[in-house]
Length: 290
Image 1 (cartoon, helix red, strand yellow):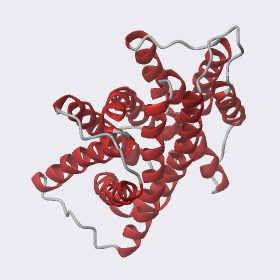
Image 2 (cartoon, rainbow, N blue to C red):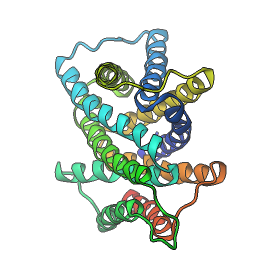
Image 3 (cartoon, helix red, strand yellow):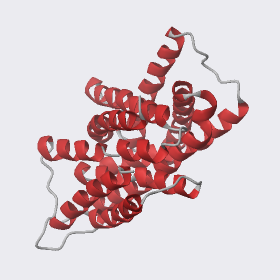
Image 4 (cartoon, rainbow, N blue to C red):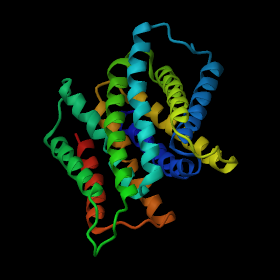
């Protein structure tokens, strides 16, 4: 399958995963929801590797080093995104986080991948969109609460770290072990790092939300399976000179997530934020044109 097809599949999976991640994050807490979601994804990939008779543990030490680097970035990005979902509006944080494709594209360009004029314009547009979406509203408009503004900043951190993580994955991990095993190794390291982070957080902070019932687990589990599928689709397209195409088309999930939030969650945006959402979608499409 081409990079375009894989990118669109990733966008579809990411879109529904991000939408389901918000109720999981608000019911279980950001860190617990991220850990449970990653656990479901790791279990699904492990079952696939065992059923297909593929090696579970890569023997390439360098591949593990790349996996650790990418998983560190993605752990920070994943936790930041779940934190943004717990604080902010989904219709705002999704477009901001979706700009991770621009980060991957910029890093790919710095490493030697050639970009077109439209791609450069799209990158600038994404940066402008991030600023617009995160701006507080004027009194006559729809106001953003302090928590919602914090959610936007957490989403910016998620975009930066996830974009860098996908670049590291495509640059060093996937070419060595392939898409499926690379995704498994990455998600396993991310799960361990998230568990360690959660353990430290529980020791330093009291009053974390208690583990919720089956409803919250359902949201987190399905979200984890879909996000793992999105990472896998992205991994299969990385490492063959189409890093920017795959990641940017994957970040088009912001359109689906925003629509779901506006229709089902009945979220409201101010005029400036609407402009930012529209610019984010348009700019992401421009970056994907080659």
